Image (cartoon, rainbow, N blue to C red):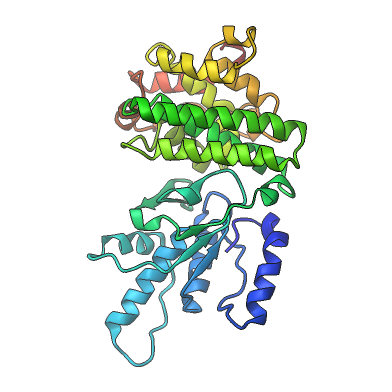
Length: 361
């Protein structure tokens, strides 16, 4: 299962080898888009269930594993000599598998990352519903059986918007964990070490996009950041949640969302998280006395400005700014305030955050 066609050249030799050995049960599926669009995800789930696959090799598409487990459970309960034809996959049907008690054993899943987004290192699986709403599932069993990271694959062949956009997600994970109300000192230390490695790797990738060492730095730093974010109830952080909602609403890649929303969110709660933002700024300005005079939000914006292929603001992402008022008015303030160091008094505060001119940070 591939999240996009850009990975096909990397995967084709494996597919050919499996086919030659007669152990490829289902054809290569490229229906799942980045972000887990509902239509493509359901198509891939149907193909996997129809082939009665007993193992998944995926570049994206973690929720397919839940559907397979549910179909296997239903077939076992049916008890007939011929296995029933699986019903068409649906988002609700996939999530209902999690309500089974006990949860059936999930088939093995081998994840091969084709970006720095880090989903394969968590027990969270996302999906974007047809109506532009972010959904998904979370359960310890969703942690993949094996993840195989090949830095050479991420150091070559990726379009800029994937390479640098998903690396920005690592920055988002780090600052989100470091400023989360539930973060401990240990979580913050791990998140900031991750941020240090990601920044170093990004600088290396900008200088030489084919650098394996730079890809290793970003991936290792991203691992630290996402593990910090997924500890002690720090997931999701405010930025992660806002950007997931924005991405689903406007069909904008989450990496681009991080490009112009991360700094704005930091600026919103700057005073309430002053100490932690000072530590973030120290990491981002390391070795540069002049840069050290700037805020964490300013330094994130300056970092984004160096990255190819990443949207710099709403308009660059094709979003009509006039629609942000309605977006702000329909956000879950109570949920936001559980995650934000600085509470939102009303939707006006959300709107001000979303539309804060970046050149004023």
